[in-house]
Image (cartoon, rainbow, N blue to C red; front, top):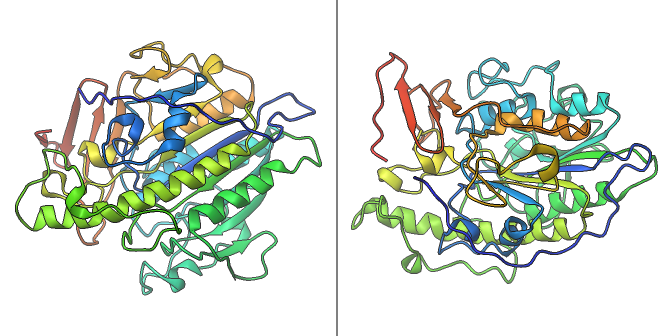
Length: 404
């Protein structure tokens, strides 16, 4: 059930030193995308996906592909809060779409700093205070102030709260006077900032960085860099669970054309970032949630279906430490019930030279509240998912039979 395919291509090599000179501990890099569902990768068998960089990463013998990985909550603020803290929503303080991550929250940024790591965050924050009266897309949302005390304890922080500006993002933070608009495709801009910071070696401390990218989140019509071709909607291969012959199919094809263009552009940006990262660096590539894109006649996220809750999760360079793949389908592929909520525990283990093992046979998934935006899930639910089964329950305890 839910078994991805696989294709193997050669990987590139890093160039910057990736081990803290004084400690011998590895540098660690999280690359976090938005709305990139697990199936939308070449190595996962999607015929529409042009992802040579991720395909190469998945093929690297040092990489573990967590093929059954899930987001704990298939909606941005809830998932980001859980990923940063290792605690689910609402326990982490984010119970509603507009909730702010508590300023004193125990985040991975704080924990890694306490362990002697230099820490940095770049890109979309997504758990700060937002202006409810402002449009979700555009400059006003992108220029919401994230004060230093609300940046999760990261020692270096350059980014933005939101805005979904996939081109020419507005940046704030360390070394930025107020707000600065940086020209370029957003995934390129953020990846370049992360690469530059990782290359600095003045203090010899090991480094932990998060590169948080908004793509391939809507607006899907946003332009991509020159040379990235947008597929024709009529050429896309749709899954069987997208209803044919009506408005759903038309919308799915139209949106997926933009979606896959942004996937291709962001894959290229990730490839350039990885080309400058040392082989010793532990690299995580994932997404905070997926997107329905017409599956079961639904769009966007929040839903408990596979397209919404399953995310890509590739980890390079920690295989020996974490023993991954022991319950998998072969070398480099794990069917363990891993969730984004595990990333802090994984990362702390790596930073201390310890092994990490998946602590469960099934991962919890839920939507703690209804987000009243177009196309999003219309109810609160909770459930769990393993490699072979999934059960979901409504707020009143009745089972939601999904018919996957």
